Image (cartoon, rainbow, N blue to C red):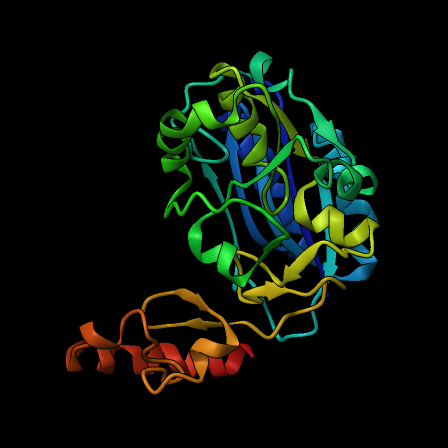
Length: 287
C-alpha cells in the first residue's frame, strides 16, 4: 500500500464545487483517506495501491497540487483509513494568522539537499514549528522547541520571542511543509529573515541521508511515526489520551498498552477505562 500526503496553496473560486468533483473521483476509485478543501488550496493524505498511484498523482496535479508537495511512503499494515472523507474548511491548516495567498507565495525555501549546509552556519537559528509532542519523537540537531500544543500558539511564541531572532537567518521546518508555509510569512511580518525546508521533514528523509535528524518523525495517522527510511517507526500512541510516546515512556509503570501512559495515568477513571476496551480491540485489528 502507498501513502500519498499532499498539499498546495492556490486560489479556489468555488471550494464546494471542487469538493464534489474530488469526492466523486476518489469514491469511484475506491480510495480511502482524508482531504481538506478551502478557498486557499488543498491538503490531504490518502492510501492507494501501487497500480492506482500514477493516475492518482496525475489527478492531484491537474487540480493544482504541486508535484514537489506530494510525498509518498509505504505502509504494510492492514489499513490506515477506514473510509474516504472530504471536508470544507476556512483554512487547509488551521492557524488564524490572517495570511493571504500572495503573502504565502513570497516565501523563501531551502531545498532538502542544501538544508544541512544551511543550518550548520553559525548565523542561522533553527525553529521547529510543530507541536511539543511531535518534537519529542524526533527533531533536527540544535532545533529550538517553541513548546506549543497547537499551531495556533505559534503566533504568540513568535510575537513574544521576535527580538532574539532579529538580524539573523532563521530556518524553520515541519512534517510536510504546510505549516511552514504559514509560519514563514508570519515571521516575515515580524521582521524575521525566514527560510523554510522545502517539502518538510518527509522530503528531507526522501532525498538525503538525514544525518542531522535525531529520532523519528511523528505523522497524523495510524502509523504514529516514520523512520528516516520512510517506513513505520517504533513510536507508540497512547489511546487513553492520544499522546505519542517515546520508547522510554512505554517502559514507565504508568504505561498500559491501549489504556494509559505517564501523561494521563493519574486522570484515568474506571468509566473511561471501560470505554477504551472497544477502541483497543479496533487498534489490534488495524495493526
